Image 1 (cartoon, rainbow, N blue to C red):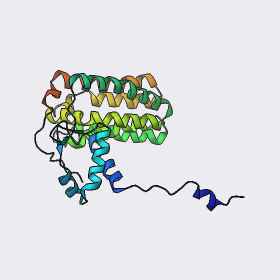
Image 2 (image 1 turned 60 degrees about the vertical axis):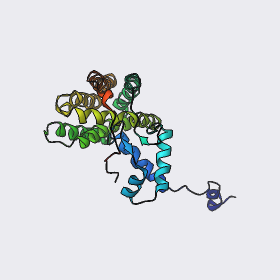
Image 3 (image 1 turned 180 degrees about the vertical axis):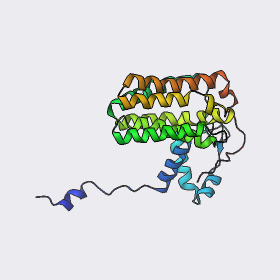
Image 4 (image 1 turned 30 degrees about the horizontal axis):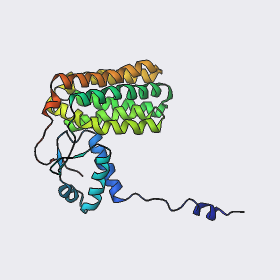
Length: 245
């Protein structure tokens, strides 16, 4: 009879998270939370110095993000956040509406009481910032992301959650750019209303209403950005001044 120890050896050694994995996760979160804007360039050396590590794990993380198409290498070999065309952004928004709307609909039937509390707390945090004229815009973008992902986590579908994360690697920087250029959107945009509608729908288990709320949020922001020509101005010069800590 095989012993427990012998059985465990068939699994092989547990893979530990490398430094490169940690940097990748951190930079991925910065992109998803909108802490970097389209066109912003990244210095591998400055990033390594900010993190207090060698360039090798930074280079590894950046290579993975380039493979994810969350970063790109320009013809002069600079690393930057991609600048989307209007057509690319329309496509991204259309895909997000369908996939994230579906996740919200599932969340309405699958959310646990604890997950509903998490969604409500995220909704309240974002709403509170929207009422603050001096709110930190980067924090507002992060709170917006936290609300959406609290909803998507409540869908109970890890594969779907992972897919949405990939979409937000591309969407996060554009959302950040929008708020930088139009800070009044925090108070006058429809996000606060759509978030409240989504929360109310999830609380009562109304899947179609939750889907409409999230779809409306994404659609409204997308239409505003395109109408204001926001994508045309996404061409920052020089290296990003974001603190990668």
